[in-house]
Image 1: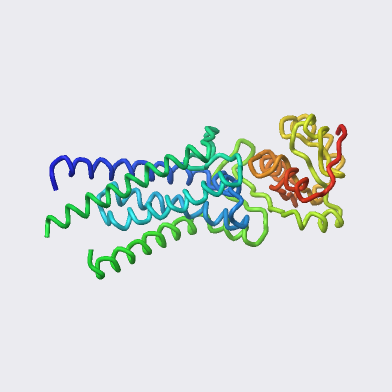
Image 2: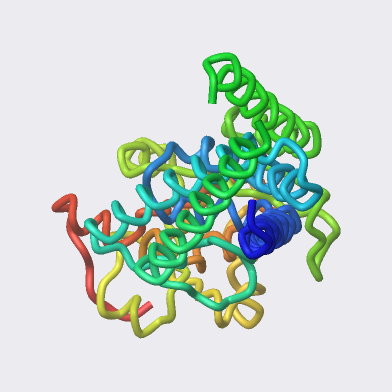
Length: 145
Length: 166
């Protein structure tokens, strides 16, 4: 792995780690607010919204922590990539149905509404970072062998 | 990446999701159990100015409202009185979230705390019904439910909407 590629890999890994640690952490401080925002998507039965709100932030935190410490990187990337795909599908469905909701991506109680379209673009950008990180890591391993 | 590698990464991924979920469930199990059992959820993890406990009102869907109303439930409109005048559910009582403190004294004199209340506002994007329901639970009302579909879902189902002042 070239020097610049190594820097890019660690930079992207840390960006993803910081993003998901922050996203997870702020949601754990207001689980009910997050449940309400998930309910706004009108995709899940009401009680399931609470189940997702109670568990998802901790999965985000765990994946973010693994990335931060450069441990089990591929598994963490797979989890984050999977979550981003689910988020993007939910946001596309919101746009198709014309719902005007706050995406609930970060702090449920911050009152800074982010529209579904903005959130979708942000998730696409994060997905590109996930793919890039995976690719650079794969290159490093293939050269090491 | 070999097949063995793939299996290992997938297994680790599953373990990661399971561990994260278990941590969340262990910290919020009461909230989840209450949500699935249909009880008002009480969680100690998010203190409010009124109390160190937060209530999570019971959700109600459109199809349940007829039965609840037949059993004597009261519909509460959490929107401002101007919006109430423009259109509200038949029989609804106006109790705007914005003027809750001023109107609550009169309200509690008229409605027993054991009465079933169904709170609504302007649909899923509107948090006022939830916030009003939480306030009512904090003030001692025992059976407070939220109709999150609110006026838009009611209207779109072809049901009548009444105009008139509170």
